[in-house]
Length: 378
Image 1 (cartoon, rainbow, N blue to C red):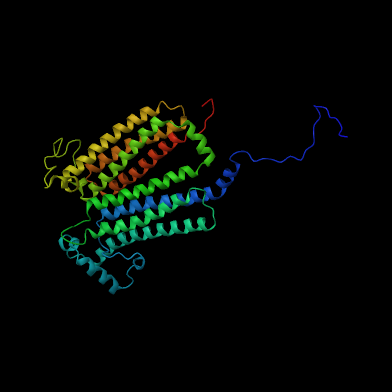
Image 2: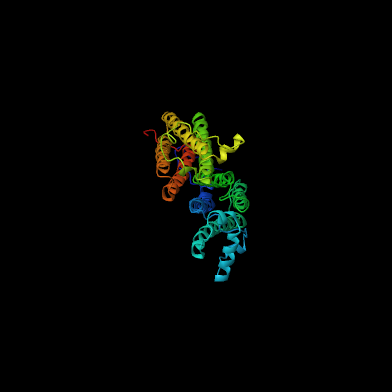
């Protein structure tokens, strides 16, 4: 017969400790999630360098120095004098040499060749880093549920970027083109920023567990999210127009500010026919559009920043503070680039500023959608 026990008596039991909600997910975070996040951060840094090297390749007029697309064999540069002379002969057959660089020496050619070769080689390195990381995690079954497609998409976009790069270069190899087509350059740079943004967003999401993200979404601010999403789209449009400016060297044409050759609206804005060509080929109209979009981006950014003051989350407000500060800095850099006729060292800092600004806008958007927890006192 069982012995009666007092209700105050301690009962000895062999306790089975149950895992608290999210414990399994946190365990994954210490393994695959954190490792994948580090891998993506490396890819992010490589893409940033790639954008900078691509910008310098454009600013040094080096992009057409390699006239063939050889994804595999092109990784090996010329190794003999005869090989270098063969590459120079191929370059002599294109319009850029015949109309702009006629008489270029082999030593001068090597300078622009190494810039373009380095640009393409870095693209190969990025592809290799993605492939090694993706298949390593895939074969070891370390990719968290729902992430395989997203990581595969990054690789697919990277391959597409390589094809678009050649599509861009090929536009300057025939006819009377001295440079690549500006709209193709804009597509190339635009996709680079899309890839960069997707990587940054993935890094942010992998920094917190799925359980934390699910809980944080309950405190999201939908109206602020819509505003910052609009700001993000506007910033991407500004980057594309900036690529058009770079594609036709429009930044070196009108070097006064706030007017353009003494006019509010440049008189040569619609010098080409048909009219729609001016949005891609008119130095006056392209730079004017870039300036106006810059003003709109800054004004709308300040409006969004002011709206963020209503947020109850301190970390979210700080993210918008950093965004607004960079927005102002990028505006100043843009004006400086114009006033100094876009020298390469200022122009490349301005382009890097766009990378920083887009990343900070994405971070502000992320914290709007997934606010961090804070103490009652905060």
